[in-house]
Image (cartoon, rainbow, N blue to C red):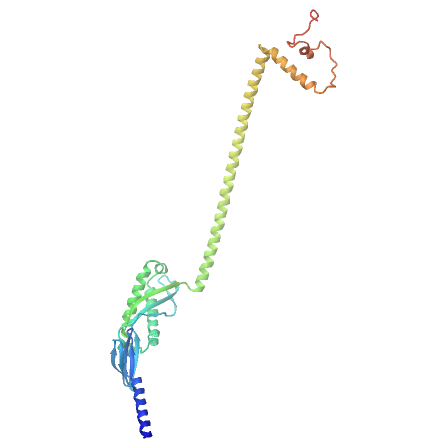
Length: 296
């Protein structure tokens, strides 16, 4: 009885294990390829639970989404003989799982072969364009040509290349350093020329400003002398008119008052003059009449 139960339990366990290993799930983003002893038997594109023969059948699941490929950057030569380092990436989709299995089997095998195809196509297409063209709007045309070439060769793998992009196209490091050094020397030379030109212009401006300053000062001095001469002439004319006309007595009186103010500053001033001196005539008579022997 115990032996029978053990045998039944072993049989049930074997069946469970066999059932477990005979089932597989296909997700909606995958395509399954069932291969029996190396011979492809069926391609499953619909998601769900499926069965296989555990020992003889092998199932390969391939992602149906758009996949990325990033091949290594390589050095290439443009049409103008310029060496550049082009770094590109591609996006592809598996369209025929059976052909994919028959040609490359796995995604790792595809990445190796497709990377070589992309670099070869890039080298062929870039060789027909100059470096400035690769850096302008023609870059879109270049990438379209590369994508067409890659697609023509990639169809044999059961894939479709959705997009190919040149991520970066740079000069090699040694070329970049040489160009940088040349650009630096050119900028330094231009800076020296600009500084020399600026110094020359500044010197010319200073010379013109100094000349204008000298001319303006000379004109100002000339005008000042003219105005001073005119003022002195007018002052002399006014003084002559005042001294020789009806205002002469007042002028003499005013000048005498100024002389008294200047001479009689302190109280201990002593003058040894004749009382009949003209200097004191306005002290004895505000009209300043000179005293004669008759009116003394």
